[in-house]
Image (tube, rainbow over all chains, first blue to last red; front, side, top):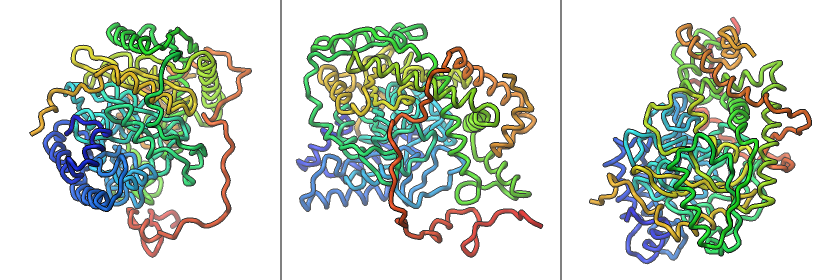
Length: 486
Length: 95
């Protein structure tokens, strides 16, 4: 069963081949067996998952239907889940139990999906390897000496290892797409504003966006049908009709214009990854697409601009963790200032503290124009680059990451880690939809192909990704250590 | 822009973080590296460029000024490290 996509499981549930209770038990058993090594889950919800599975089976017996009814899933531990611990990968929220559900969580509950648990992540989503988590790093299911990527590393590893059928993630600079690439699965970041951010713990509010991690573009479409939409509780969620993303999956790609950015095939890209992506592009030519080189001339400035905008917004967002209303508080504070300082210094990890300080510095008196305002101007240049590219092409394709998953501990220098997101970060600054799908393998490790669409072109991006997956089986590859079902 | 240990102390205080003497050199060096990366931005002339604060070119939605949330004070206060009689308790501020 675990090799089946959500779309296939949905058919199996509808036809009565398997019940949600049986399916949920399969995944819970696998979590019990594999999670100690993989560390993909921070919290497992055995009892409530079985309750939800029984409720889904009962609803189906009563004539209810729905593509996600009874499908076992996981939520990144950044989404608030009522009555379930929500840690954001941090000591400061280690004992926090959310009093409400995030809008995304509520949508999946309404659709009848079963929550198996909460997945591990870089602390406050700040990282590209899952190594900044207070709860320890997640292992890559393809090679346990390697990172799963981050920050949604737990969700990506859980899907790749068959510990859940699908999972949610969030993407501020590549945090859905890069782990999807490293773990050999499909990860989709929607346009900014397409999915509600309410109840999703804030990192950088003008960049954060929730999206699906799953086995195929078709599954991503099924998840997006549930996740997307206006939410009165998120003032930046967009008032735009939600399409049924499954109806256009099989649209023809004849005449599709693909742009490949010279800047994404330049120095720093591994030769094997480049060859894999160029080979994958040939599949699109067979489907009637034409390919042309394009320029994103300001792409090289995206990491620098991002490391002003994201830390600045984070420094403001994370000021709420003060040891007063919820979360960790230090022992025996001497006075109020001592309480704030020790609570935050003991509660946050090194990377989070670094980013808070960089953001505080960038926003401090006298530096605003040189840093924050300058970064916003660069952000405009980056957005303009994409606008000009989309005058010529329908989709921008390249590698998700310069190489395959790296070894645990290999990137101890923060700046080296930041440069990991060189192909994904500009997309968040511009607010565009983008997907990573498996495009090939090198030395037993998966390679992600990155595809960026124009504003609110999620249906088109999913269509283009799905057509590749109809022609190829890369998305069906599974890590050998996790394929036995007993 | 020079960035030294005294700057770290200043911004750590602004951010209400405590950086110990043991950590100070390492933190200063790391943040210095990050600021060096950030300074790549300065190589581009952006005088005529309009800043982009947000990816969506839309006006903030407004709503009626009505109370839409129910009072969950007691429930929410159970999450606090220390509370009493509906109040959050912190170390004494005034003697």
